[in-house]
Image 1 (cartoon, rainbow, N blue to C red):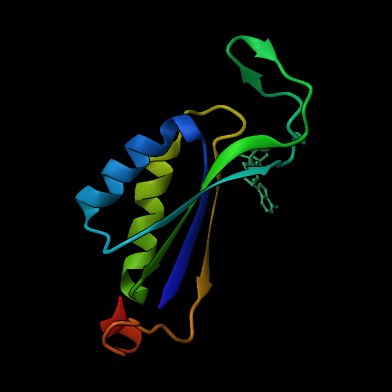
Image 2 (image 1 turned 60 degrees about the vertical axis):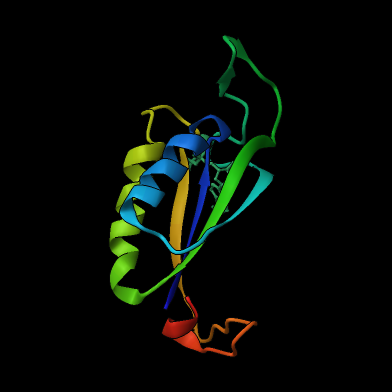
Length: 112
Ligand SMILES: Nc1ncnc2c1ncn2[C@@H]1O[C@H](COP(=O)(O)OP(=O)(O)OP(=O)(O)O)[C@@H](O)[C@H]1O
Ligand SMILES: [Mg+2]
């Protein structure tokens, strides 16, 4: 199993969520977060004004998936999250060793 984690623009989240649902993800976890990348926040533009802040509002999306789905899901996120401007976000994939569905005790792939 893999955990796909994406940090994306809040204003793109609706599109990303629809794209993931069209693909057929089984679930997702979403949080509002703050962060910065290589511009350290400073050069991004919000509503026409350049902001001097170092932590920008982003949305973190986590999706636990079968190994063979991870590459496709990364592609779905990247294509739906991209605006071509600095601050579009980052996606990474980590290995997951165990998962359990709490209600049934099902393990690993059957727990997803
Ligand atoms: N190295 C990192 N580690 C953890 N989180 C990161 C890292 N880089 C970026 N992020 C998270 O992703 C968000 C968006 O990053 P951002 O798109 O600005 O990345 P970037 O590398 O600066 O690319 P770009 O040059 O396109 O802006 C950040 O606000 C932060 O929450
Ligand atoms: Mg950046």
